[in-house]
Image (cartoon, rainbow, N blue to C red; front, side, top):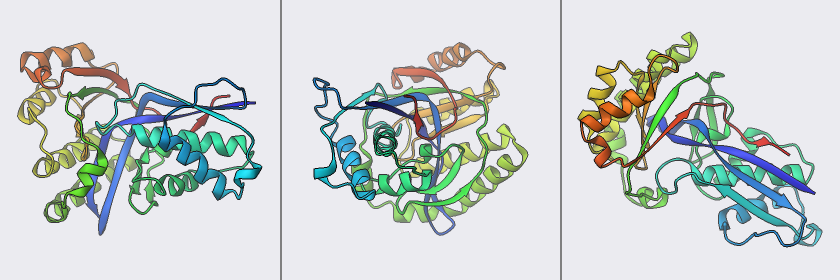
Length: 291
């Protein structure tokens, strides 16, 4: 038997900070996936990927399957998602493993259950939900689902610098988060209006406001130049990884050639720092069983 499952990456978050009294976020999934394969075939390479193996263990425990009841199994993770950049690479590996394990055990599992199991291992991104979702990534609570996934393109800008989420969380950002609380409340209001009206422009306002607020916590180099590109090309907006290093430039598909965005970035020497870039699209989130 062989089970394959996927879960998408993100390009940072649309919003993150103190929202309605505590830390919350809204990630967005992009068409870049981690693929996990569980197999009973011998000879499969199943070395490494400690977090994926831990996800397999916690899922078995959740369904009451003891170690003696588990047949010999190999676990293979295939992913090219950049690590330690704020792109939800760990969430993708862990969530896909949980989904594959539940299917292997022939057990139904919900998005909320996947979230709770992910949280047993580390803070989790909301890419595990099908639509854009306000999520308490520390406690695992689903605050609000938008039931909306806009069709947008994103130029993902990746620097060579890395930042592990665990390292970021070791620092105390409490005062800065509180300082940003009013701005995040405004950004959340824009997001709610965007979801209600299906407005990508309001979505861009929400993301850009949250990204700008985060400059006092984890400043992104070439910030002013990035804003210039958004303005001169009339892009939807800019978003960042609030606890990582990537930046996303959101644009309306079919309205602009992403190569034009790249030209403007190069003209302003932005790519001297963000030396890797990718053209991606927003997609439906969640774990998908593909075989």
